[in-house]
Length: 205
Image 1 (cartoon, rainbow, N blue to C red):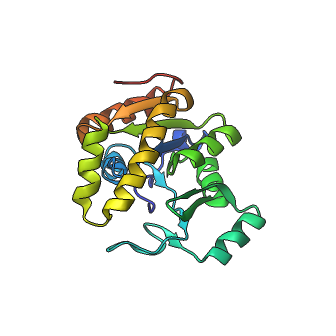
Image 2 (cartoon, rainbow, N blue to C red; image 1 turned 120 degrees about the vertical axis):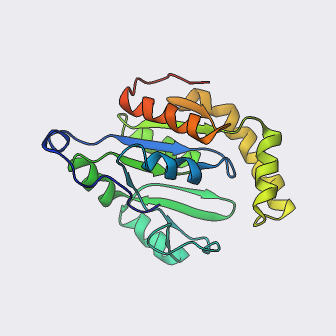
């Protein structure tokens, strides 16, 4: 995701470090829709991830993702430039470290929209990060959403559902909060409350 909102900070905001919000969840759960709606409610800097996968229709390099080669990704890892990285469905994803730390130091709240294993890495490295797992109402509904996107073949849908079942099983144990995305506005409202009162290990239903 690109940088959305967060400009025009006042002096009180600049006087504190920003908060790091990590949002994760299974493919097809609606993370992009939720975080875009969240941007309209709360000023956030959206970290732009790097990925080795090809762009989907309508995605823009440097805004939705930075699209890199396998070699470029390996070089970023070797130089320690990634805060976290993970492999998903045969492609690698990572979060550039320097921009995240710079925005936090400037007092901006930063959102990472990343995979579950990457979220675990961030939490291990930065215990103060607030982690939110976005869950579907059911696995059947997740399957319907994946099939309805039209960009995922049946084999990939099946593979992603297997991964999703594992993610749903472990999420309550490793994330601070679990938010069910049955209704986008309700999910956004829950995340806004989490940002305003980020007590850990509280799992809204």
